[in-house]
Amino acid sequence: MRAAICDMVAIARFLNVTLIVPELDKASFWADPSEFQDIFDIDHFIASLRDEVRILKELPPRLKTRVGLGMFYSLPPVSWSNISYYLHQILPLVQKHKVVHLNKTDARLANNGLPLEIQKLRCRVNFNALRFTSQIEELGRRVVRILREKGPFLVLHLRYEMDMLAFSGCTHGCNDKEAEELTRMRYAYPWWKEKIIDSKVKRREGLCPLTPEETALILSALGIDRNVQIYIAAGQIYGEERRMATLAAAFPNLVRKETLLEPSDLRFFQNHTSQMAALDYLVSLESDIFVPTYDGNMAKVVEGHRRFLGFKKTIQLDRRLLVNLVDEYKNGSLSWDEFSSTVKEAHAYRVGSPSRRVVIPDRPKEEDYFYSNPHECLQLLDEPL
Image (cartoon, rainbow, N blue to C red; front, side):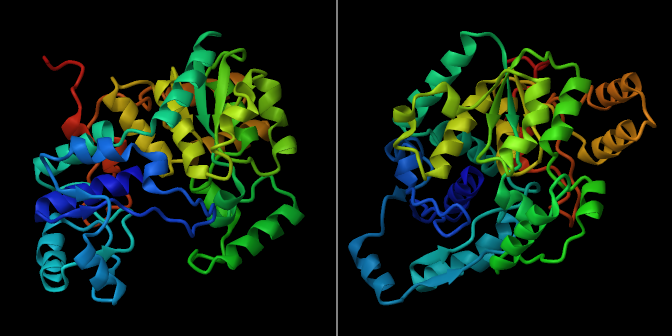
């Protein structure tokens, strides 16, 4: 959501067109009814960018009438497009139809090869203009304050929710009944294109989120103090009671927003998963260590934001290597000391340190994501201010 909004601002600025405050998806799995202003400070968003791009809360009456009559153009932009695509393909449509509705905005702008001012504007939107509402910000500060009173804390972005498993087809550790339930769910959503998935192959290739059991082993192998507070940034963990038992035994100080706050604090956020995720996002930014178990969109954007805040420690887990090491340890091929030292060695430099993005021409999905490492906008630690 944040990345898509940043991209749309950058595109509107480059084309010198007016941007209408983006509408948020309400039809996804979570079916969150939240509007833009329920999550972000809309007035700050518009005012902080007024010298860059004209942003309106809604269409002017004359254009709203045209849209009501169907006199507009709607399309999904081509994924990972260079800015020239918008200049030569989208701008003429705006000039012709007056209103163009971009109905998909995720990953529609390239990571690389863009003018420096576009890259810096993406950062300005993300790190300055996109402020959460005062209600979300205040609650985030309160959670961080509660955690800080008890010492350091690690945020574990544990992507083990039902929709994630159904979408990815990852069923390692699930029983037959659960695997069937997840498969049924995948077939129930027609826009999830991939249906027949070999979970074992996908896991072996490092394309599955780590299970809570695997995560417990890996955090222990990395030498994380068993008594450290671990804040679980996640929705409902699938098969939570059974699947979280190993992690809870290894790290007894597991906490969540629901355990740190009173029910009354969260009552306005219930059934608004994007607002709950915004709260987790704020806590993730402030943590001493951030560990995502899957490199999804939120994990990537948090990683990039933590780099911006001074290259705060983010452990980027090498899942392909780790699942093989876990299997070798479990079948007795590796001793605990060998397992632990290999895990530590493999992640010694995977901690969000200053680096250049990996660029892979013609394969944008495989290269480093702009928002996980917006190096054009970052003050490298060894550079003079």
